[in-house]
Amino acid sequence: MDPEQLWSRAERPRRGRPPAHSRAEITDAAVALADAEGLGAVTMRAVAARIGAGTMSLYSYVPNKETLLELMIDQVSGGHRLPAEPSGDWRADLRQFAHEQRAIMRRHPWLSAALSARQTFGPNALAALEYALAALAPIGLEASARLETFSLLTGFVASHVSYELAQERAVEAGGRSSGELLDAQDRYLRSIAAEGRYPHLAQALAVPSHDSAPDAVFDRLLGRMLNGLTAAV
Image (cartoon, rainbow, N blue to C red; front, side, top):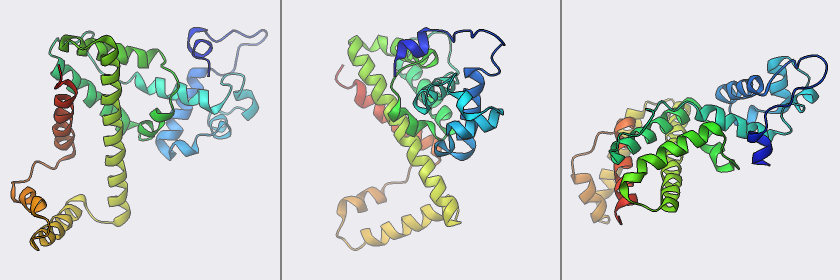
């Protein structure tokens, strides 16, 4: 993967007839396919069929599937809905940024897993990174520490979304509602805690439960994450 080749050089116009397709069209088709059927369904053959092209002709626009994945990640990274500049309230700005990341990853369920294979930052991802680094500036962290903090924050969001989606798939496969499963889990844990072998668990269960709505859980954990990231400053 050559980032300069991928991002810094525009698609070269070919001699003769105008090209029948474009990288943008191919990327759109690949994203739509991944959204509908999962990342495993994205093959050069399947994407070519989706846009009505021959499989081999696709390679003249995108050299391989790895490059296509980079294009897909950057395309959906453009979905952040953020103000032009951070407000200066770093905690509020990072909360908003993390919630935007989560929304994008939930709209594109393949993204949280795909990020671990990303090799480079495209223009949309760089714009999001620049915003996050600017949001972190008021904390007083060194520039390199801000990069690490961005990576930790994104990793937290990706991990949490992966867990959310896995739980939702499990609930769907089991044919029970999430509320029914939570109630069953609560009854089981309370019965175990009552035996006296797990005093710390019993103490935790004795405290009134927090709001278990997915948005509330994410925001609560995010707050703890931000506290931990900046505790040393």
